Image (tube, rainbow, N blue to C red; front, side, top):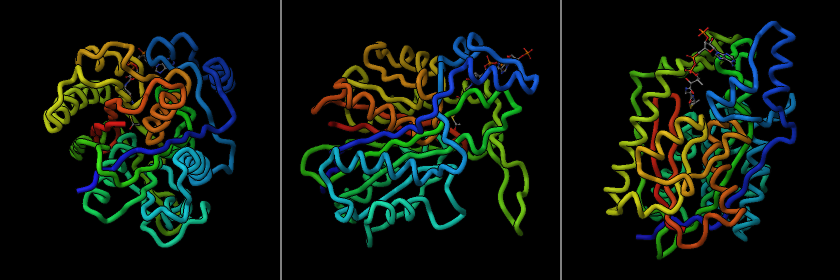
Length: 324
Ligand code: ACO
């Protein structure tokens, strides 16, 4: 049975950087008070990249995908699977993956979206792994991409300061050597209310609430307990010890969650990749963006064992263990 090996990665962030001070000044014009100090102390976030009006998720995804394809030395026409993880698709349909396929000039392979909010990339990666392991695909492109700013309520300081826009991508190829060695995906739909955007479009109108709503403290607690168990379980499945992990690439929501988790798992800070300070929470894009940053600066190297983790709305969570 072939393994799915990561052979390339790419990341793309929209050029507009908004610092906490910029955001605080903007919110102040609407009598909403926040500060760099509050945001940094509670979340570790210092800035985020925001897409300009009219910029779409598929555009960000295509930029990241092209960088990943170039990095892998793979031509778009050789892709037989494209999966895009997003909660902010361009359209109701077609899928963002189909738009990316067309923009890349690829044709004929499978292309579909995965909706698991901030766990989306890990869900998409595990899905692509299963396709390759089963012999149903040989060369896959997996993308996490969001214009998350489009579903933020800019009058809700409890959520709008936390998120950013961006895209990250990896290219997977069937290989005899590992590769992804284990994956675990989980969900608990009974917790949907703690993190949701409970609206849709019907009969030409927005029905329900189209903005992200969150019970931050409930999300914090569930994220820490579910990810700690998921890490232990995925390592048990792979028959490895937590201390064998070279790099931990967790979902980038909050530096306090990341630090708490790292300590609980016994992983020292120098093994943990953190980009939330620069990117904020880019939902499905956060893990591939962090992974790509650590690959490009030379931290993640050939042969390293990497654990990626996602957690988010649904409630969903999951882990992927990959040998580079
Ligand atoms: N600036 C200033 N004050 C604020 C802000 C802000 N931006 N936001 C909230 N406050 C105030 C609140 O109004 C409250 O004021 P009060 O005491 O007068 O009522 C006070 O700060 C404390 O608010 P809490 O919500 O209790 O703050 P907490 O310490 O819990 O931090 C936070 C909030 C950062 C959201 C935290 O709960 C958290 O990080 N939770 C996890 C969130 C997360 O990871 N979300 C992403 C999940 S992934 C996905 O799928 C999207």
